[in-house]
Image 1: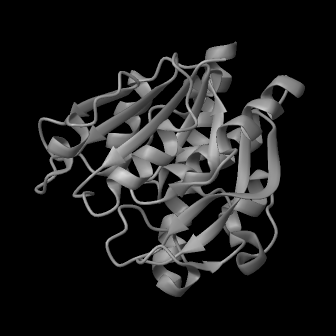
Image 2: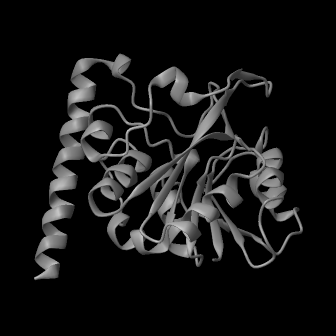
Length: 243
């Protein structure tokens, strides 16, 4: 199974090299890491182009598109059988790729693998050994994730066949990871690996952010309304197409 890792990049020079190294160390010669730069204003593109590895494929948006459209572009460029999502500022821990591939080989009906993650600060220090120990156990079903998203993009991989369902990403959903996680809960099967296989870095400049209830009730209700609206449209469109 060929692996494609999809990464959206924006002003990522501070942590980018370490993350790229941690990913490439787990990829085989035929795999690929697709990095799409969203018009960074720092040296991100220069740094990426200077990393002489044939598995690293660098693309640059002609205009700033935002994180979700940048991820979507990377996904459309991917050619692998198994697709991993990656943030630009985390660190992949040893065994992340092999653990997911073992699940896919052993369970042909599994369409998405989600792992646990350690939480890491700006200096690279682990602050919490388990994301789910802090935020509550992982819930694979669509309803649980609709209420409180547990599908963290940096811990997620899925089979290529799911792109037909996931894409295009509606521009008004809260974030791509909750969109993918809920749709996979409807149309596929999610397997949780109860092991921290990525160090998830939290800092003021994160490219992506979670949607916390602390954002305010009005904003959370608006996010959930837009999510529900788009999920209903996607389900109905697929139902019509299957007739």
